[in-house]
Image 1 (cartoon, helix red, strand yellow):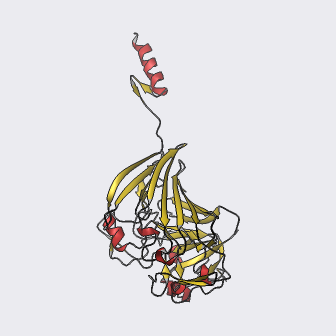
Image 2 (cartoon, one colour; image 1 turned 90 degrees about the horizontal axis):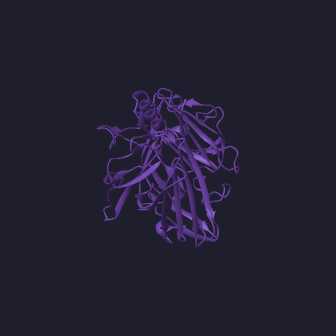
Image 3 (cartoon, helix red, strand yellow; image 1 turned 60 degrees about the vertical axis):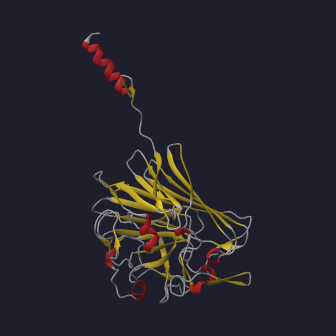
Length: 379
């Protein structure tokens, strides 16, 4: 064959994705499993790695449905992990401040660990002083979920399911829960929650990932916008006082993007009670479905994360109680105060004891559904 003609054929084969006998295939989203460890009571825990063609990678373990890793590119294409977490399962079992975990049955605090439902008082585990926090001593963050991985229409998905038995941690009803994590090709992580019960109960599910878009020391140089005109002031035990307060003329005003470190040391009484931000913002456009709740931006890396949700509010926690005793997963350093922040989409805290707050009751033959989206990009 003439040399020039041979070069033309090789070029055409390359353009068609074929080189000799080797077929070159387009990159697709993938999901694969490996063993992460065993719990102290001998249950096997698996890790699932979801990846897309854009280079984003998310790792989730079946213990607590925990997101252990979120790797995304910066404006220069450098990929870093922007989620706080640990290296080992032992660390997650021992002393985790809910790093990356699914939270239930009830996210946030319930005053005195008690609530009434149809005239009957229920007593929950008190694991936060006198309060009940994030589902109790063994909430959804500490159980092993059943996993079903799949790739559909180039979307990597992991469905997790768990049955919470009647009176587990004090909650009535057998609650069937499903959580679907979906990684899209546009660097978006979607979280869908479904639940049903055989007895009247309460529910408030959320996701507790700590984000740091710099992949570095702290989040004080991040800029945050919250789509909220009001927030909930709290008492000294961080229980809502029962009233909505305007964010105007307060350090809680994030209606336009603001550097988190600007007001965090302000001597406002509410900031002193939370040792920083640990409050619930009441989102605008309530009952309108999925809409933008927050935009987090890190100017140096260019990374941006938009949070969309159908929930009525969002808890912004600035990592105030991280105290330098927990080892980082990617270095020999420790997680100090404000190493990461949480943006937890959810219902109002202490809702069962606050008649003016939206209902969190789930009845038999009703289906609970909620969706939150974490959309990563560069600016």
